[in-house]
Length: 220
Image 1 (cartoon, helix red, strand yellow):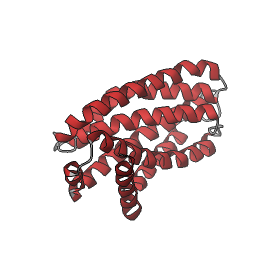
Image 2 (cartoon, rainbow, N blue to C red; image 1 turned 120 degrees about the vertical axis):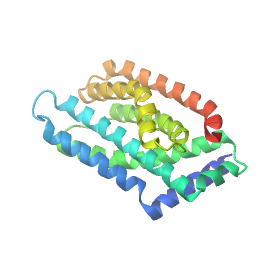
Image 3 (cartoon, rainbow, N blue to C red; image 1 turned 90 degrees about the vertical axis):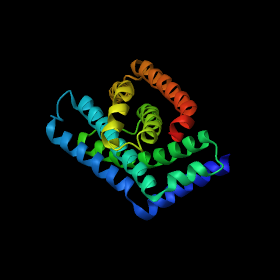
Image 4 (cartoon, rainbow, N blue to C red; image 1 turned 45 degrees about the vertical axis):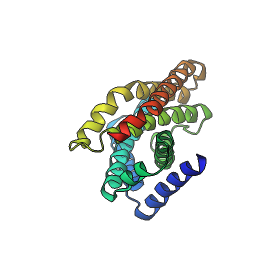
Protein backbone atom coordinates (compact mmCIF):
# COMPACT_ATOMS: atom_id res chain seq x y z
CA UNK A 1 0.00 0.00 0.00
CA UNK A 2 2.78 2.42 0.88
CA UNK A 3 4.53 1.73 -2.41
CA UNK A 4 1.32 2.51 -4.32
CA UNK A 5 0.77 5.68 -2.31
CA UNK A 6 4.33 6.85 -2.89
CA UNK A 7 4.10 6.06 -6.62
CA UNK A 8 1.04 8.31 -7.00
CA UNK A 9 2.57 11.10 -4.94
CA UNK A 10 5.83 10.87 -6.86
CA UNK A 11 3.95 11.07 -10.15
CA UNK A 12 2.05 14.19 -8.98
CA UNK A 13 5.18 15.93 -7.73
CA UNK A 14 7.14 15.09 -10.86
CA UNK A 15 4.31 16.31 -13.08
CA UNK A 16 4.15 19.60 -11.18
CA UNK A 17 7.94 19.98 -11.28
CA UNK A 18 7.85 19.72 -15.06
CA UNK A 19 4.81 21.91 -15.68
CA UNK A 20 4.90 24.31 -12.69
CA UNK A 21 1.27 25.23 -13.27
CA UNK A 22 -0.30 24.65 -9.86
CA UNK A 23 2.20 25.96 -7.31
CA UNK A 24 3.07 29.10 -9.30
CA UNK A 25 -0.58 30.07 -9.59
CA UNK A 26 -1.12 29.42 -5.88
CA UNK A 27 1.92 31.51 -4.96
CA UNK A 28 0.78 34.45 -7.07
CA UNK A 29 -2.68 34.33 -5.52
CA UNK A 30 -1.35 34.14 -1.96
CA UNK A 31 1.20 36.93 -2.39
CA UNK A 32 -1.28 39.24 -4.11
CA UNK A 33 -3.75 38.72 -1.29
CA UNK A 34 -1.15 39.53 1.36
CA UNK A 35 -0.03 42.59 -0.58
CA UNK A 36 -3.58 43.92 -0.88
CA UNK A 37 -4.20 43.42 2.84
CA UNK A 38 -0.92 45.15 3.58
CA UNK A 39 -2.18 48.34 1.94
CA UNK A 40 -5.75 47.94 3.18
CA UNK A 41 -5.08 47.88 6.94
CA UNK A 42 -3.23 50.00 9.45
CA UNK A 43 -0.30 47.83 10.45
CA UNK A 44 1.02 50.08 13.21
CA UNK A 45 -1.91 49.80 15.61
CA UNK A 46 -3.25 47.20 17.98
CA UNK A 47 -5.01 45.36 15.17
CA UNK A 48 -1.75 44.39 13.48
CA UNK A 49 -1.88 40.80 14.75
CA UNK A 50 -5.54 40.31 13.83
CA UNK A 51 -5.06 41.87 10.40
CA UNK A 52 -1.98 39.78 9.65
CA UNK A 53 -3.61 36.53 10.78
CA UNK A 54 -6.77 37.20 8.79
CA UNK A 55 -4.79 38.15 5.70
CA UNK A 56 -2.68 35.02 5.89
CA UNK A 57 -5.60 32.62 6.16
CA UNK A 58 -7.58 34.37 3.43
CA UNK A 59 -4.52 34.01 1.21
CA UNK A 60 -4.20 30.31 2.10
CA UNK A 61 -7.89 29.61 1.41
CA UNK A 62 -7.85 31.34 -1.98
CA UNK A 63 -4.58 29.72 -3.00
CA UNK A 64 -5.76 26.27 -1.91
CA UNK A 65 -9.02 26.64 -3.80
CA UNK A 66 -7.15 27.69 -6.94
CA UNK A 67 -4.71 24.81 -6.57
CA UNK A 68 -7.39 22.17 -6.25
CA UNK A 69 -9.33 23.48 -9.20
CA UNK A 70 -6.29 23.62 -11.44
CA UNK A 71 -4.85 20.25 -10.39
CA UNK A 72 -8.15 18.46 -10.94
CA UNK A 73 -8.69 20.10 -14.32
CA UNK A 74 -5.22 19.05 -15.51
CA UNK A 75 -5.77 15.44 -14.50
CA UNK A 76 -9.11 15.30 -16.27
CA UNK A 77 -7.70 16.85 -19.44
CA UNK A 78 -4.80 14.41 -19.60
CA UNK A 79 -6.94 11.36 -18.78
CA UNK A 80 -4.76 10.56 -15.77
CA UNK A 81 -7.69 10.37 -13.40
CA UNK A 82 -9.51 7.69 -15.41
CA UNK A 83 -6.33 5.65 -15.65
CA UNK A 84 -5.83 5.93 -11.90
CA UNK A 85 -9.35 4.67 -11.19
CA UNK A 86 -8.81 1.70 -13.52
CA UNK A 87 -5.59 0.73 -11.77
CA UNK A 88 -5.61 -1.93 -9.00
CA UNK A 89 -5.27 0.66 -6.23
CA UNK A 90 -7.70 0.90 -3.35
CA UNK A 91 -9.71 4.11 -3.20
CA UNK A 92 -8.49 5.14 0.29
CA UNK A 93 -4.91 4.92 -0.99
CA UNK A 94 -5.78 7.24 -3.88
CA UNK A 95 -7.37 9.68 -1.45
CA UNK A 96 -4.34 9.68 0.85
CA UNK A 97 -1.96 10.11 -2.09
CA UNK A 98 -3.90 13.07 -3.48
CA UNK A 99 -4.08 14.60 -0.01
CA UNK A 100 -0.32 14.25 0.48
CA UNK A 101 0.36 15.74 -2.96
CA UNK A 102 -1.79 18.80 -2.34
CA UNK A 103 -0.39 19.22 1.17
CA UNK A 104 3.07 19.32 -0.39
CA UNK A 105 2.01 22.12 -2.74
CA UNK A 106 0.26 24.10 -0.01
CA UNK A 107 3.20 23.80 2.40
CA UNK A 108 5.51 25.34 -0.21
CA UNK A 109 3.10 28.23 -0.71
CA UNK A 110 2.62 28.72 3.03
CA UNK A 111 6.36 28.76 3.68
CA UNK A 112 6.79 31.65 1.26
CA UNK A 113 3.65 33.37 2.53
CA UNK A 114 4.87 33.16 6.14
CA UNK A 115 8.13 34.89 5.25
CA UNK A 116 6.24 37.62 3.39
CA UNK A 117 3.81 37.97 6.28
CA UNK A 118 6.68 38.31 8.76
CA UNK A 119 8.22 41.07 6.64
CA UNK A 120 5.04 42.99 5.79
CA UNK A 121 3.29 42.72 9.15
CA UNK A 122 6.34 42.45 11.41
CA UNK A 123 5.00 39.39 13.26
CA UNK A 124 6.88 36.50 14.95
CA UNK A 125 5.25 33.86 12.79
CA UNK A 126 7.76 31.05 13.32
CA UNK A 127 6.62 30.12 16.83
CA UNK A 128 5.85 26.49 17.60
CA UNK A 129 2.27 27.27 18.59
CA UNK A 130 1.63 29.16 15.36
CA UNK A 131 3.05 26.30 13.32
CA UNK A 132 0.77 23.80 15.11
CA UNK A 133 -2.29 25.90 14.26
CA UNK A 134 -1.02 26.23 10.71
CA UNK A 135 -0.55 22.47 10.35
CA UNK A 136 -4.02 21.63 11.69
CA UNK A 137 -5.78 24.29 9.64
CA UNK A 138 -3.97 23.28 6.47
CA UNK A 139 -4.78 19.61 6.97
CA UNK A 140 -8.45 20.41 7.50
CA UNK A 141 -8.66 22.57 4.37
CA UNK A 142 -6.80 20.10 2.18
CA UNK A 143 -8.87 17.15 3.40
CA UNK A 144 -12.10 18.88 2.42
CA UNK A 145 -10.60 20.19 -0.80
CA UNK A 146 -9.42 16.75 -1.90
CA UNK A 147 -12.91 15.28 -1.47
CA UNK A 148 -14.85 18.12 -3.07
CA UNK A 149 -12.47 18.64 -5.98
CA UNK A 150 -13.05 15.03 -7.01
CA UNK A 151 -16.80 15.37 -6.42
CA UNK A 152 -17.09 18.40 -8.72
CA UNK A 153 -14.49 17.46 -11.32
CA UNK A 154 -17.01 16.15 -13.86
CA UNK A 155 -19.47 19.03 -13.44
CA UNK A 156 -19.63 21.70 -16.11
CA UNK A 157 -19.82 24.46 -13.51
CA UNK A 158 -17.08 23.02 -11.27
CA UNK A 159 -15.46 26.46 -10.84
CA UNK A 160 -18.65 27.54 -9.06
CA UNK A 161 -19.54 24.26 -7.34
CA UNK A 162 -16.16 23.72 -5.70
CA UNK A 163 -16.16 26.93 -3.61
CA UNK A 164 -19.91 26.58 -2.99
CA UNK A 165 -19.35 23.18 -1.40
CA UNK A 166 -16.00 23.89 0.24
CA UNK A 167 -16.59 27.26 1.88
CA UNK A 168 -19.53 26.38 4.18
CA UNK A 169 -17.69 23.42 5.73
CA UNK A 170 -14.34 25.21 5.73
CA UNK A 171 -15.69 28.22 7.68
CA UNK A 172 -15.31 26.57 11.13
CA UNK A 173 -11.78 25.51 10.24
CA UNK A 174 -10.81 28.99 9.07
CA UNK A 175 -12.40 30.73 12.07
CA UNK A 176 -10.64 28.39 14.49
CA UNK A 177 -7.35 28.79 12.64
CA UNK A 178 -7.57 32.59 12.63
CA UNK A 179 -8.45 32.77 16.32
CA UNK A 180 -5.71 30.32 17.25
CA UNK A 181 -3.16 32.20 15.18
CA UNK A 182 -4.12 35.56 16.71
CA UNK A 183 -3.81 34.22 20.25
CA UNK A 184 -0.51 32.45 19.58
CA UNK A 185 1.00 35.55 17.96
CA UNK A 186 -0.20 37.61 20.93
CA UNK A 187 1.52 35.26 23.37
CA UNK A 188 -1.66 33.73 24.84
CA UNK A 189 -0.89 30.07 24.22
CA UNK A 190 -3.16 28.86 27.02
CA UNK A 191 -6.15 30.69 25.54
CA UNK A 192 -5.30 29.26 22.10
CA UNK A 193 -5.43 25.65 23.34
CA UNK A 194 -9.25 25.27 22.99
CA UNK A 195 -9.08 26.54 19.42
CA UNK A 196 -6.32 24.07 18.60
CA UNK A 197 -8.38 21.28 20.14
CA UNK A 198 -11.37 22.37 18.06
CA UNK A 199 -9.22 22.37 14.94
CA UNK A 200 -7.99 18.88 15.77
CA UNK A 201 -11.58 17.69 16.18
CA UNK A 202 -12.53 19.08 12.78
CA UNK A 203 -9.52 17.43 11.18
CA UNK A 204 -10.39 14.02 12.62
CA UNK A 205 -14.05 14.36 11.61
CA UNK A 206 -13.39 15.55 8.06
CA UNK A 207 -10.59 13.05 7.50
CA UNK A 208 -12.72 10.12 8.65
CA UNK A 209 -15.73 11.14 6.55
CA UNK A 210 -13.59 11.77 3.48
CA UNK A 211 -11.79 8.45 3.80
CA UNK A 212 -15.11 6.58 4.02
CA UNK A 213 -16.94 8.44 1.23
CA UNK A 214 -14.10 8.99 -1.23
CA UNK A 215 -14.63 5.65 -2.99
CA UNK A 216 -18.26 6.39 -3.80
CA UNK A 217 -17.46 9.97 -4.82
CA UNK A 218 -14.62 8.91 -7.12
CA UNK A 219 -16.84 6.47 -9.01
CA UNK A 220 -19.47 9.10 -9.84
